Figure 1 (spheres, helix red, strand yellow):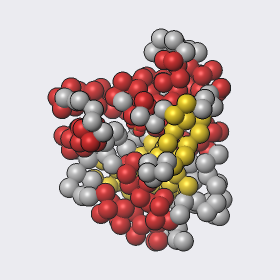
Figure 2 (figure 1 turned 180 degrees about the horizontal axis):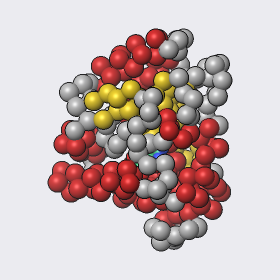
Figure 3 (figure 1 turned 60 degrees about the vertical axis):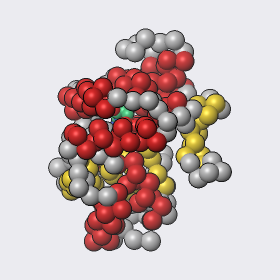
Length: 227
Ligand code: C5P
């Protein structure tokens, strides 16, 4: 990473609003966007399609070999392709989220995805959303944000997102799933979900996505990340 390619790292637990905030920041700054969770979701999905059991060590091979592509559809919605099949909807289900969290605890899967992720850091800059963007992938990022929100606000947001997509979900079951996934992400041995020592924490419980974006853009300006 160079000064020509500043990185804004946004880490935090599920439902903290990272995705919406990262997309809004990338749009405002004209930066590239890395949705690293999508990569872990793709490994989980590709493994399931290949018939692998959730803990199979063969997921690292899948992570290294899978052909993936990101695009934007005519309706301005993001599109994700796995081996030329559009899987944008499939990777967003809670089942695939859980598979992603399981494969993400395998250090070989993480290693297989490292260079792919760093490859997104291209001029004029990158907004990187995930769990270990500030700690592992981009430790020299000039701006690191750790985005949190109360557990109930996070579950409610995820519930609303899924309902909007027409998915039939149950708030209590969803809260339990999110708690299980966050506990696994925070306690795994490799790249656990923790704030980098130099990250700025923002609690989004009572803030809108636009308010968080405005705050991060102000911080970016103080670190000379402008366009
Ligand atoms: O952010 P998202 O919910 O799409 O991430 C799915 C899962 O992928 C997370 O629960 C986490 O286990 C894993 N992940 C990760 N490191 C990242 C991004 C996501 O381990 N940088």
